[in-house]
Image (cartoon, rainbow, N blue to C red; front, side, top):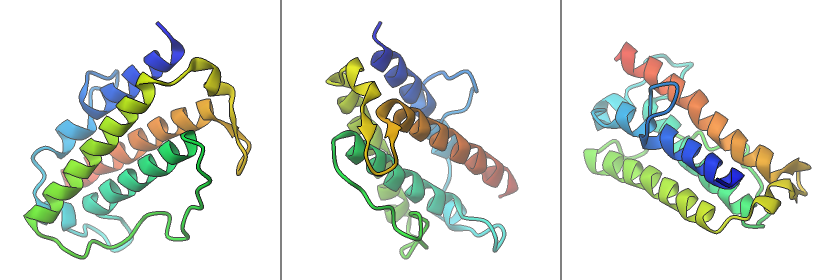
Length: 152
């Protein structure tokens, strides 16, 4: 099995598979309502919804980098308040998160292992580091979501 296939399997398992950590994004979010996702547990913490939207934007950001685009990360680091707290808007965020997973899955289908050594010029990190970084990023924020969900 190629290295990119192993990485793809790892990324997919964290989204909705059977990862070693026994927690997935899709399962953790499946019964969260818009009201729960929008609820501010503490003024110093992000909401579940804000974290989900942050994940979506970072997944897009890194995927665009892997496709050769130069991306400037905004000062807000993709943490922005949710404007529409409706169930429909929450369903849309969850659907968009799923679409980012589909986009990553499609990316890995055609990815060549030799490209793992490529350097992203803006920060001199390899594609390998970026791909593992987005996986680590998802897991980090998944932990936050799990804790916030327990506090609801």
